[in-house]
Image 1 (cartoon, rainbow, N blue to C red):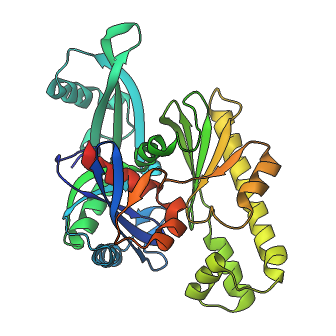
Image 2 (image 1 turned 180 degrees about the vertical axis):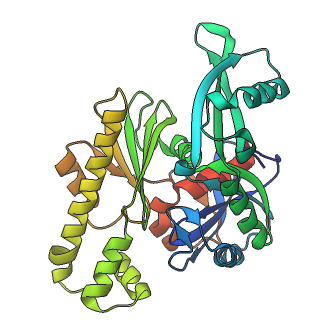
Image 3 (image 1 turned 120 degrees about the vertical axis):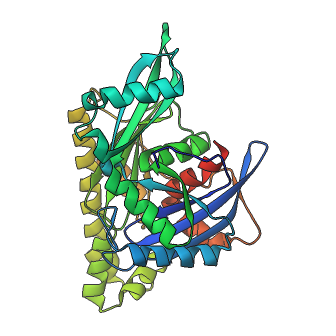
Length: 352
């Protein structure tokens, strides 16, 4: 099972985060997509740590629950490995090579591109197109991950009674969804867009430029810090704290004593991630910031981020231009919308 691999069959996306499993199936009519099925199931603490599945049985059980809840009948799945577990590189290769010849050449040259022995990794490639002004050469994107990372994904999916049809890279799934929604958000290809996916324990920065993810970085910070503070301060359970965070009902002091401090810390993390990007690349600015992930929709975060960083900020809307089947709970999925970037991108793989 290689990265990018596809059996050209109908499949659905499975996104495993540190706090929940999401499953989503799309259909397509002409150029329009519709969400046919969607389900989510919470994960226990430490079942996934820093985007690595550590308790396969528990994650498999959550996938089974989410699939049942969603009413999905398909068995073929697209799942992603996180960017931190993947090495990607774009190289130039002769355009006249067949795919088999290209695969053989990359295997021979692998030690030039990856720091691991070839027998310890899953390596795959995708031909992006000809090199500008040099048509006899093609841009080739190579991606590799240690085989153990791929194997745990396959084991988890099989444990849920499903088949692994595609193993994608998280940043490429996000890229696919970004390109689906960018027109609706008024984003131009020549803009440098910082897309932040703020999860429960990890915040991931994806820098989007000309429709591609050109830089990815994970930081250990997320909404769990806010949940933990609510639990500690107000004596609530994990479930009660999560519900109160989304729907309100906390004491009046919550915003000034808890939420403000968390928002300031989160914006500090956003600023720090941008500084890392500037110092590691030739870029020294971004044109827009897009906030996504389950923590992105907390009160006033968009406005505060824009004030403190001085760049236009928007909340991500991956459901832009997606229709909903009548069986979908519209209120629930709209509430989850900022956290659906990865699973929508994975579901799109059925149309490759």
